[in-house]
Length: 423
Image: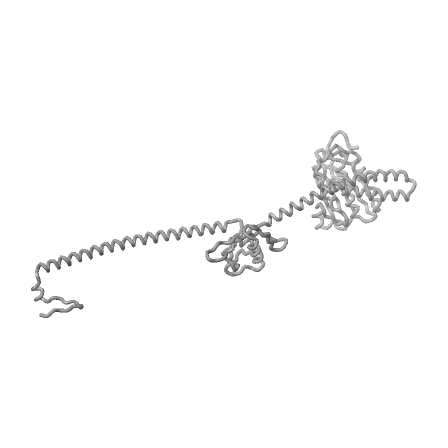
């Protein structure tokens, strides 16, 4: 029988196998068995190595997944930090294209509800000039920028930092935006208050310096009036002189009372007597304007606890305010209103003029310092009145009808049975 060839190998025929040495055959079988065992061991080792590698890969995958999750948690945490910062954080690339803007930056730059780094990849030109200036100023240098209209303006402080980047001359720019609006407002208010304080001190000093010569001039005017009673023309001049001096004195005293911090020096005084003296003092001003002034009061004492000089200044101001409102021939009526009931604790003083009245919009502002409708007036009279009346625990109110006139009413705590009156 011939040999059979299979896949290039020669398989011995039966005659050849029969002629082989049995020992060689056994050895060949043992060799084959050893080779098979070695192959089986290698396969087992390979399976074990594959299993180990699979476990190692699974562990690496778990570690990688954990690392990615941790990185995501850290990213979200850092993003929450950036979004929660009270200052703005703005990041742009070297070509000034948006990279990132946190909530504060979007609010300060008025980009709320928009995605500037998507919808507007390039920074607006006005903001870019500011950012470029901050870059040129160097790290840590702050630049100030104001945006918006006067009533809605926002002042920002801008500081720049440059992120390092390998292989590039400069990386992204990080800008810290600080809202300085309130700070600037407070600085302006402090500066305004400082100037007003300096002005108040200078004004009070000037008023003190003016008041002393005014007192002397008033005294000499009174002496001249007494010496020229039989000379009507001279008396008329003296009357105008007294009117001007007393109006100027009232203005000077308003300045002093407005800026003074001294407490009232109160005494027990008769309100009717004080008003009578005040009206006599105001007569030259009324005559100068061809006006009349009348007092309507009970024929008895009405006692109050008050500072006579400050209370008289209130009466001066209310009367002069009425004089300015009236035309020649008008009459101002000053009346004392009291309730004779046993439990009555208030006394009222009314100054009623026959002027054109006060408009509703002006009624809301007449007690504001500086507000006036009379050219050349400093606008302190009614503000001083309100302050002085309140210092005495009283109230000052106003009623006005257009075309008919105005009534100012002072209410003061009434004092019953107090010994001693102001004389």
